Length: 92
Image 1 (cartoon, helix red, strand yellow):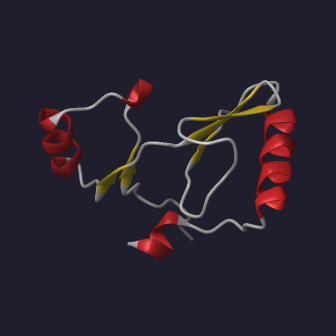
Image 2 (cartoon, one colour; image 1 turned 135 degrees about the vertical axis):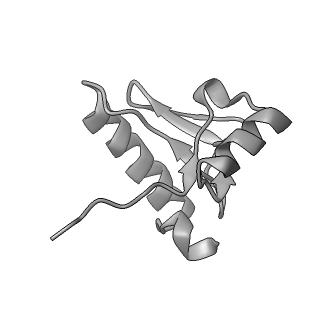
């Protein structure tokens, strides 16, 4: 049984992209280039445009030693905003 799914979303490293990046991502089968509006880092939430999570925000997290603290910071922010998570695929 195969549990491998081909990715359909591309997150540009550092969040930088241009039209050439979009073309290359599309040629690789990506359906969308995805950036983020908030980041959980070192157990703290950082926001680009606001001071709390809003519906539709995408939160960047990395699998690193402080991931548990980052996840808890996200969960706290999500609960404070009265939001729930969903898969991006559900909004395509």
